[in-house]
Length: 592
Image (cartoon, rainbow, N blue to C red; front, side, top):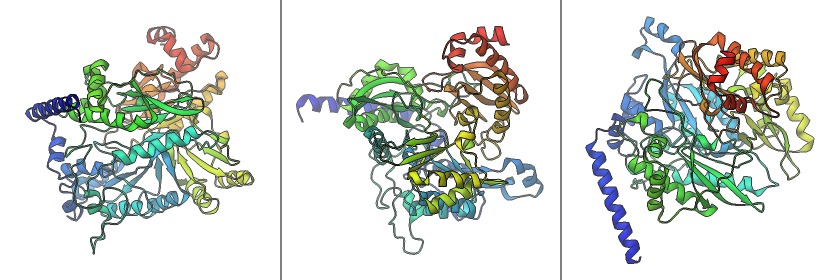
């Protein structure tokens, strides 16, 4: 190492030491205290797992998120629980997420998840907006059984939640004619491996053989003595951290909603590198003006082999300088906002160890949801099945869960979960196309071609009755609202329009409502904030059109906007682009 490099390294170490001293002098949030005292995410979890109580303490609950689980309760039954004097006053259960980078999984893995939802869950699974799988209704006493079984099928729950890098998103298309997709999906997997926590706590708690203590299955660290977490350190990150990989012609991974988005740059049919965009994030608190939703900003261009080192530099800047005192302002987007891009880039370059190139500034042109039939380029086909809000269940004549069991045991195709909570069946032989469709139809499952465009491009978070943060309904309300929208659009002759509608039961934005054409965010019981002016491409924020709109007035309000859209749109203009061009004041003047 030359003298100049050594000098720069010493200066950087002094800066980091000064920053750590400054952090130690500020009042940290209680969660930081839990992490500091946790011994790499252990804390009191082991003791509380066997204490006979139906729920966990606050400290354990915060640490459990890093292991992939949240404590919840059935909010529909709270009065019943109190009347029956249930311990703790609630019917507690756990929600557990599995990490599935890029949504890639096998039929065998999905079948195991379906078995678990019947054995110990609420008999359904949910395909998530981050391409994972979520199980609800798991009792505390069954938590270890679920996590150990997931690891046996070579999946994991580690880092599905918590102050770490969460599930990596990527376009799920199984295109073989173009190696770019395989290269992006490999980066997605490599990111997951590089940024996973190394703590042995995960194996100790969930995977070790209870009698022998043997630690032998994949999923977290190796179960041996803890390293000093080489990337995270003992207190991990100030807040959750999200990444996604996409292309200008396929932004299904919604890269502008991520802390780091990787936009693939293709030249001559080869993926040569990535534009990195940073500082996206959608959580906000309407009563706190210091919080806001943000789309990511272009930071730099990096060659393909430097994507992970550059991402690590960005993450470490957030680790060392992100806000650990106020969790409402702890995401990377606030650091980027407060510092400005010039200062932020300079600091990233210090951690990276060199200058970063200017971004290529390539524009997003499309969002390919992968639905319906498509050729892979290797003689086989894929089929994208639209699944409303990602909920896999058997209910009445609709028996999607049973259909997936039959497909998984007969055709056994590789699978991909999409960022819009849908499912792609891969490697379908031409002679099996009709067989796949027949299984779905015989189980009462509408084919994608039978689903309206408004429903296909909609998403809702789970909300009631399981989410403790939800203010109002979302998943249970959205289907009926889409029924009304379909009727309205058909009456206006606009049923073929492409636009995204996303709903969440609270402002945290889990279904990414803040960059969609139409966003609906729970504001009060039965009332929503209505956002307009976003885009199906995901590259800009929408804005508040009206606040506290009663649920039964949402579609009538939208009808007035669609009537104006039909009358005054420009050629080929989308609904989101129209609203963005018109602006809030003009829309209110003409439609309000």
